[in-house]
Image (tube, rainbow, N blue to C red; front, side, top):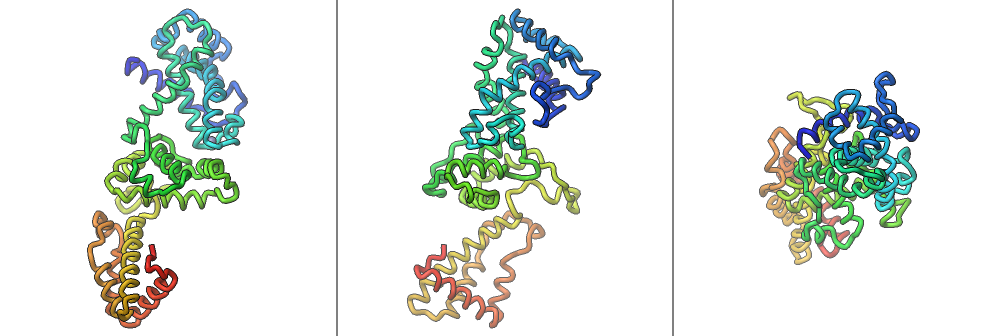
Length: 376
Ligand SMILES: [Zn+2]
């Protein structure tokens, strides 16, 4: 298609489709126009659309149409296309995702699935209005044969624009990190797909409800598949991804940062920037992850030396001083004012006898609970 032609149709579609993105209207009105005054006659529009298609003139007519005329054509195209998309494409995809509820009908689609459905409908309408250049006798059948290619191409275009992986495939090192867990691997793929698409899950960073449904379908664990569990597992997958920081930055953090900000009350910081931008979790997460890594290393080292007969107190002070006194690589990229320095308190504590005793007791209890001296 010509780029400008595609853009023109897209913007017109936006006017029609942006009108009513709620699923609760009766069939036939899903893409009705906002104002009754400007509403093109649906029946007349559909008849004209089918006639133009059968004469092989639809694409040309759509390209030439302006104003009300164009609106009538796009409205008719939506009316024709959306039931085909839902019945021939969306329903099957929702079943594959394990979304039995979503598969029941457009009105039952979860928010993020409804957004995906609208994107697919929009893609197919655009495809129809641009490509119907030859006489088409059975328009429904013709549109049906194009559903897959039209929606996949649109999906790739959207992903390409955001710089996400075109077709996400988990790298081998990540599969190793995640271990032999089919659901975690699925979740990792979902995350890579999700960061590449335009929509947000309402006010949330991740579509937790949708993924909880999918988890239940895959694991058969209905009671255990709730939002909290999925949230915890997302954190687990993100940690595994962060093992390769530059990969993580390129394929998760950066594309996610270009996603549309969620529709939620924003609080501005002193620079007038949103104080709660789209982030993956608490802002101190990388710091915390680094501290956990260092603590595990410290406990392992202390455990080995105490087991070998060294005295606990001096060993703890020495190891903790060594481990936490070193560079904390995970926090080097943070501006000093961006987060408090979590290690400052540690070096201070080692100079205080009572706090040293408390640290020694804590470390000792960790070692006792993990006799293998492997706290990881
Ligand atoms: Zn769904």
